[in-house]
Length: 319
Length: 250
Image (cartoon, rainbow over all chains, first blue to last red; front, top):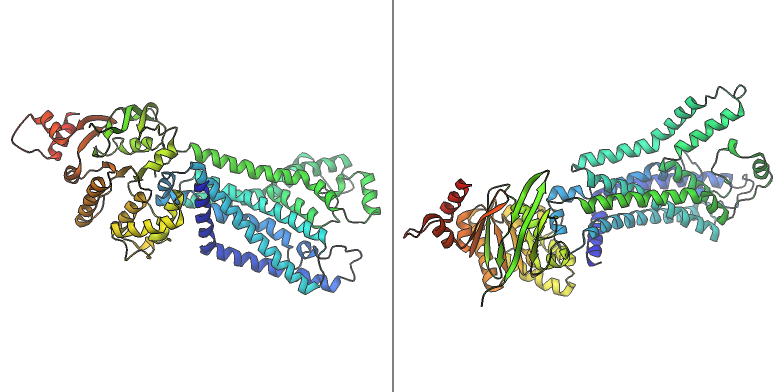
């Protein structure tokens, strides 16, 4: 434990005193500030017009102001936080010859990787929590709506899912920093994987779905083909952590969303229910809907870390 | 009283890609001595040191350091052994005191205790004035001094020094060799000194071992080895002459 605590403390200090953290924080702080400001202005103007907003406060996060909402922003660029915090975590020490010094101290070898991962997760958590708090305070002043207990809970769950999501990318970055000796290679590999999983999979999903079940316009296509097309598309795009995360958090933040699935796939009864009862879902029901998403997100984060852990433990360190 | 052996290996082997880096190596280092660990580049010296620390898994044979099996009790062994790797690295953004604090933390030394020790060690290695300078701005010699301070902070029983004088100026190398001698003398630290600079090794070593292609070809005091190779003579043979004789024969 003593080794873990020492590594953890050192890494946390490093993160907070590094320029890259300051730049990252400034960038993300700025963007989320602008997004929520846009959303807030929009919200204030239209608050009366919106029919049944029971949770106007949460709309600060989910309403698309100018370009994207706060949630979408974190989904797109949150991974970058994880990657930047982790891409050189092991191979920088290897390149500088400090890794061998570190593991020749009386600590267990896993203290090194656990400490580094934990420090990254805590940094991410502090970053996200402070940004959400700032936006909330900002929203209070701007919109003048006080969040209810349920809204606070939804925000807390949103934060937890976000921390796991970004930690997944941290885990990927750490894994690459173990696998690749060169810092540039590991940085490039993690960015490549990020672009692939976040952007190309959704494009690829369209292509594959259209090839397997071509949709030629509303009238000519049989409903079965349309459903098949959408099923395939959803199945493929769900392999992207970004899609998992977006669907999960959108449902948590927006109580009016009652399913993560496409409207076409909803059965007729469900459709009637959805149109008849315009009431928001309770928190428990929202969680129930996204439970598979969240479980998968947590699982891939843990699997990713476990692989890094195993590789690091069996690797021979000479430098 | 016969000094006890503090390091003992028994047919220790390590194979890399079907090539034996360390080949059935057996040698002993006695408590309280300075053992000069010699051999050409790539003879397997560093690999042997890593196996003695439990950082590398032997393909065969066994080793004992301070009576412990490094493979099973790696943490305990690393508590007793200070290892200064060849070309040791540092965190450039920390200063000397912070670097030492980190190593002290990793060794579980209490804060108040560590402060006193750091002061004392900086004095010993002559870095008192530069203690608050970033290590990134240190010269090679200053870094090596800091490296020595870092291995001493845990108060080791044994020191593994891998090419400690490599790249140092003559003055710095002499200082370091003298320091190693006095650590051995005053603090009774056993030293396993790997080096290519043979006259320095000759100056302080009690015994030497010559390792060539993974095998220990000679082990003993310099006089014994000289006697073995050149017979008894009036002439004092230097370690260099002895080493070259062994090296040519293999």
